[in-house]
Length: 101
Image 1 (tube, rainbow, N blue to C red):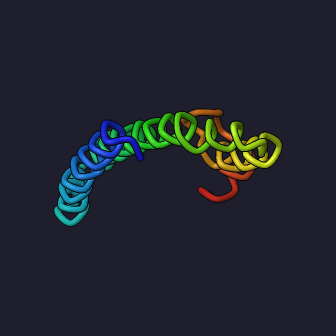
Image 2 (image 1 turned 60 degrees about the horizontal axis):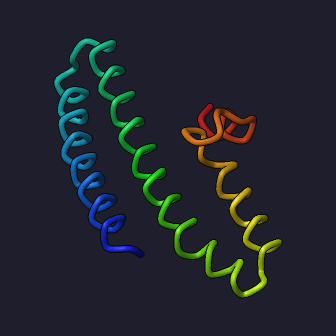
Image 3 (image 1 turned 180 degrees about the vertical axis):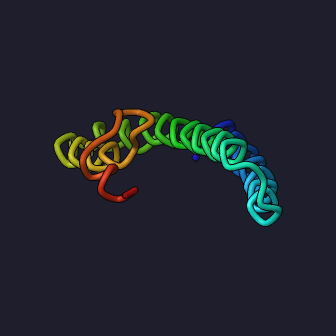
């Protein structure tokens, strides 16, 4: 993993962890549901940003290497499968909607 992407992903995830602890506290304190939902949406957005950083790193490293090695079809299939579970990049899919319901 490129150092810049590694640092970005770790920092974002640590921020999410702190934010998640705060949201757990909100639920434990039985705060007003719309307030909690707003924070959950913010957490989802933060996690999607982590996914974008990871995707960027993957394309810049693993995908480029696979193409150089002549494994284009394999890496494209892998990438498409990965994106299937990344609605922040591709939009909601049936698989994502089923997994979240």
